[in-house]
Length: 82
Image (cartoon, rainbow, N blue to C red; front, top):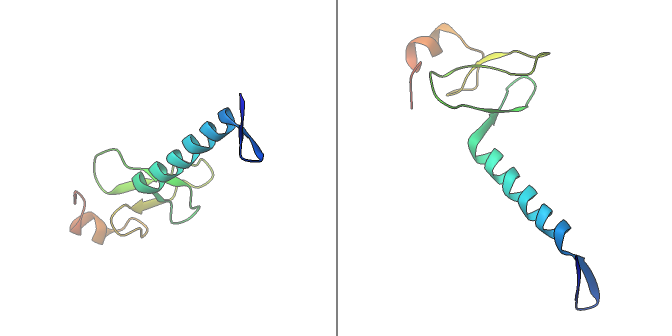
């Protein structure tokens, strides 16, 4: 459906999709951290701080808390930090 706004025609469905897209991007930004190696957004949904990138070509193991490669310090210092 198109409506006339001023001198412009607006595709209401495209405008609605754009609003949803922007809201999705904001949610992803707030609820994920990028993999330190490949930078794909990764969501933590519970458990310890030990993360493994879900990308098959990456699989980098890293610490959610400090974003460094998973190591013994991470294991001892903040395994279950909130």
